[in-house]
Length: 209
Image (cartoon, rainbow, N blue to C red):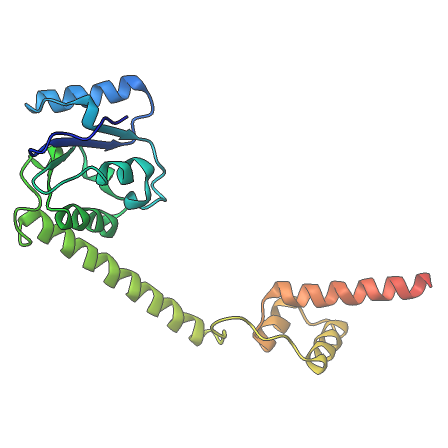
C-alpha cells in the first residue's frame, strides 16, 4: 500500500516485508506506534515477497524508492525486511544512502544506520558479509580438494569412449561389481548401470527381430 508524493520537505517512509494478512500489518503499525513513530499510511509499504528475491527487485520497494528524496527517512521494524541475506541488506542500505535518505530499524534501537559509513551497525553488517563470503569460498575449495583426492574430474564428466564401454561390459560379464567398476573408471555407479541396461535392452531387441 502506498500513497502520493509527499511535500517538498523531508518525509518519513515505512517499509515491511512478511505480513501475510491485514491483521499482521496492523500489528506492525502498532509496533511503530509503541516505538513513538506515527505512521502515515500514504507512505507505508507492506509486501510479502519471497526471501529468494533481492529486496531491490521487489515491486513495492521499487515503487517506494522512486518517491524517496534527499533528507527523507525510511523506517523498518526488522532488518530482515531489507534483504534476503546480509549482502542484500547492505546493498539496500547503500541504495538508500545514494538517494540521500536515512534509515532506521526499530529492532536495532531506531538509530540512523546511515549517519556514517563507519556506524557500528554498518561495520557489523560488512564484517558479517565478509565472513559469509570467506566461509563459502573455503567450503568450495575444500569440496574441490576432496573431489580431486577421490579421483573425480571437476566440471562436466567426459563421455566414455567405445573401448571403455566395451571394457566395462566385459568386466560385468566376469562378475565384477558395479561399484568396483565405477571406481576403476572414475565414474558414477549410475553410469555403469546405464551402460549395463542399454546393453541388455539392445540384446532383447535383437532377439525379437
